Image (cartoon, rainbow, N blue to C red):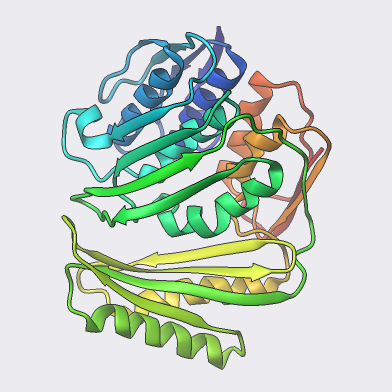
Length: 347
């Protein structure tokens, strides 16, 4: 039984998600204590509880402590991940309404299912574009294309947008089984090829996504960067707006986003996401700050060495490094200081 203190590192849900994924993959039982102890509301929130239950569902695990606000969970995999069709509704799994992020639930089960013996199709319901989580467009444009280079084949379709606090969004995910993971060199990004984006809004006037998109295109053009941001207006069970961008270089893809809020001008939403993209582009480094921690579990299991560079090493990245070390004997060398510009290498 691997013992993990949930207060270590960034002390949030990343500890739980990484530990669950690697527990399923390696077959090693794990006990997590002090889960999310550093957060304002400690313990399992709806999206974290749904992640625990989803991980248990795909491998027939025996679980103790799977309830809302629980700060301790014991997870014993019942076997390898089983491919197939699965539906995960975060609100129903938690027993209460929630805009829990569908992409964070996917983080928990994507790697185990990719390493399973067959293909899988998932329907996941919850929040698709919510704070403190990768938007679906980021997963679609940045994460999955990068994982494909490592050997994981998956695609995600956005069927219904879901925003905080109502949620109600839905995605459909297809994951190819039998992945053969290989190391990757993401040290050099090369020349910028294109920037694409979506200015999205649900159940709001059409001028809102139009203003966000226009502002984004104008600022990018002023910076002499190729711009192709499209406004998209949808219906759905929840209300929200945001801008989602991806910059494709010769060697890698980076992603940036910003969400709207009541009283927040459309132009500010655009400036936030575009400003982050321009700053990262001018810095001249590699990956955006949010991608390394999502790649490391797969790279730790891959054949061959890997090398990454990023605009910033985050607490999430260092947390994932620590959790990997408790499941997999694989040296990981990190160069740089958390929160400061630097690089990360994985051997």
